[in-house]
Length: 630
Image (cartoon, rainbow, N blue to C red; front, side, top):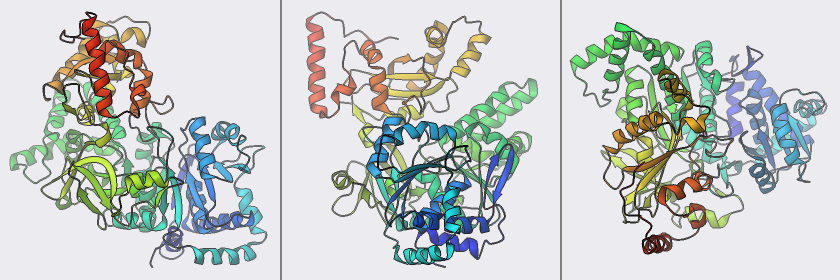
């Protein structure tokens, strides 16, 4: 059958996948609860009837704020069936950002998952007269549950089903399906308008790449409000894959062993954490076992995906897989066919290692505005290349601008930004090309490689270009450094702000008998500074003179989503970090230049102001010519 609207997927559950008992599953009080294909079809339609019964009209907005649950899928399909627009938002949003989105999208009702979300959101919702009700997915005493909408609809189901059929006929593939609010690394988030055609064209193009089929299992732990996870969720549904939702990020390891999935979607940071955990186990081994473990790791990092491994290498790899890597596969449940990675770049070294271990990583690339995939590595080696994000997805066009910016065109490109035609016109040109803001290149004329963010590339005061992400990515496998941000725009040299891995530092301090009262004191100890300096020196040896990190400062805070330094997709919120550590930047560079003051100024103006500032320092004999030291 032809799937042109998202809710058309439900017909597959009525016909092809009717026998699927675990279409969706989640863990409740330690046990897995299954929703069958029949449950999914039935309750999605009833929920749609419930919304129609409440007087909702085509095109109106409904907000959900929830952990990933089968309930979310039912609500999502019900909203779609009723011709409404689903606005899913991150559970980690602050109250100000949440209030902005609720007002901006003009939602009438909100559905949250549990008591914690209700407590967080209700005070915000109470400020907005247009919001009629806040429902919950889980049963909470004294709070109206979403099931009440279904129960009310059941009383006049025949009448409402007739209305529903009329609404379904009126929904076109080009109608707005969802609003995805960007994470807002700068300023207020924008509402990305995604049509049925946008996201379904992407799900259909990805479908032949997904190497699992009906009856096999996928573990899901990324937020369903993220376009990447949501699109793949639709693609899984189109193939009849059973989707299991992890309890939380902290339970992933146990959930993998429990359900033994064939695939899961990830972001690089999760795979890096898995690597750190595995390596820490290896470090606890003794004697010959430890030697064999790290011999296998060294061998794995030399894996070549282009088929250039020698016969001698392949013999050793076979031994390594039997002695060491077999246990890695068991840690992932034993059935993993592929791990799909997106959202940011994964270190090539780790991709090689995982692949050598028999855990195939398929890295892709895209944005919310592109629904999201533009390019992806296939499980098939003929359509993959390590160190790239793979060939361009079928149906998508990519070209590189003169400055290397990646431009995209295709059925997956968003309708525009909600209520923001000016921003839409700034990012989609007159010929329909979407400007990604990413810089890239093609390897062998086929494989797309992302080199940096156009807006994040900056110049030092000497006019040298610095690509911060290229440098930052070199520290991703560090067990000492949790997060690192490169700074130095319009300055004489490059520096780094570093949020260390405090678990690792605490272990190191205990092992070396370093005494400290708290993290603030720990990061100032000579031993810790020396340890970090060694890692900086290793990376510096691979960089050009103008790129080398001349100074760094450790901070005593762990950067996270709740504290604001990371976006919900775990990207650095550079402006937030600049503002938070303005006093440290002042100390590093010897003046009060605050990056937040420079927002809106062009680079020439900032450079001129910087030169005037530096000139004034010289006039009053502030020594700015000394070689910078830590």
